[in-house]
Length: 57
Image 1 (spheres, one colour):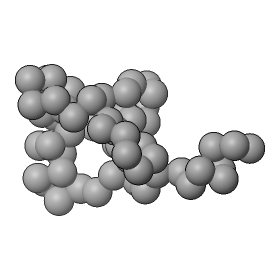
Image 2 (cartoon, one colour):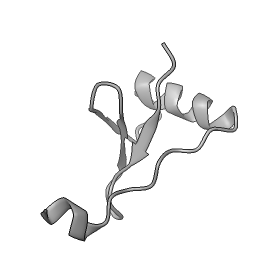
Image 3 (tube, helix red, strand yellow):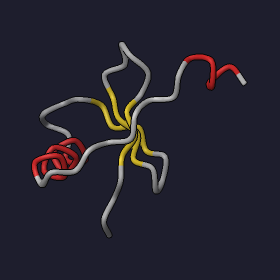
Image 4 (cartoon, helix red, strand yellow):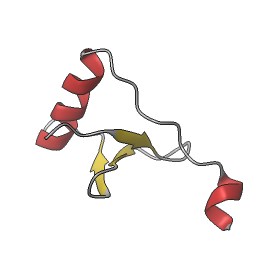
């Protein structure tokens, strides 16, 4: 399965995997983070984070 990702708000050291909502910490030992980095290396780009205003709604 090909996953897609979304950045978290600024100051958060994690990314969200959109398909299952998994929160992936920026940890070099984390297999999910390694998969995210490989996905980025393939030329993909994560969706931008929601603005703080959108999260308050």
